[in-house]
Length: 405
Image (cartoon, rainbow, N blue to C red; front, side, top):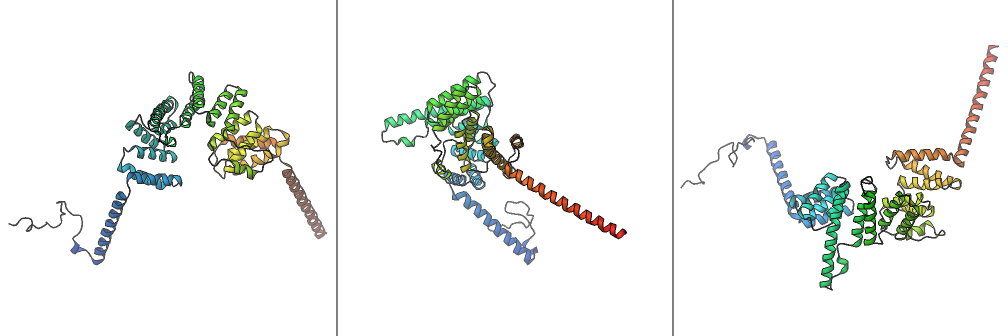
């Protein structure tokens, strides 16, 4: 009959039977009661807000938010959305790949590697992007194996797409997820490893050439493939072949421009999204200078400055280009190198070798006409000051002599 209705809670204990560490409400002052009430209200608000955030977005919506933030370079907010998506579905492939890409942008290679590695474990035979990203984070043969696996996945996906297109003529060819450019770029990544990190390994030269030939065969209009072929030929001192390759690369992306055109017209002709990234265009300029194709090199460097005029290396290369052209180009070389030296500390550049070379070149070039005139004026001013001081000394001496007499 008594049941639960007649039971009383023991003082000083909570519902779960644990001792309460709080004072009895009756023992609190009015101020303490108000404070306690405010704390509980704030706690409830926080819990409600957290719950609202948790239920507000689905995983796909969170990832869309991540990509929006990344497009606007708001990586801090993107990371928060990404972390929430990972908490909801830690083994969601899209979540893992987007998270890995974000971490890659933020420079957290170890965590990015974990995300892409987990994506590979969950779906090794579908989706090539994770292999391309993982290849960037690995070195040597591990990276090569990763790129090769990515190529294998791409080719399988492309074959599947082609079958679908044949079976359903209404399919949109533009909806294909794998392109020849993608496969060609993967071969380029392999070739670059054998050109740099693994260049001393057995048969590195043959593997590099084979990868480049496959890259060009897969996509003859990929300027990166021809750029790397130029670099490969130059490493073998095949200057004619290197020149042919770099000129082919240029023809695929650099707009035509006559000598009479102004800088403004060149800026209008530059593509909004150049096929070659900024760093690869710097590499192009270096090869052109080494091959003494100065006009094209200057054109490439001028385009880079139009895009971003605060890159020390570009000003340095422009100065070096004019320096090697001889006496008639000394003034231009000096101007460009001085500008490079001026912005070096401003932009936080830390290439000590480049800095030393710039100083050596400027020392060899000597002062320009304006600098010489400035130095002459300073010398004249110094002489005048010295002459005035001497006159004052003579006057002081005469005065002292007169006083002595």
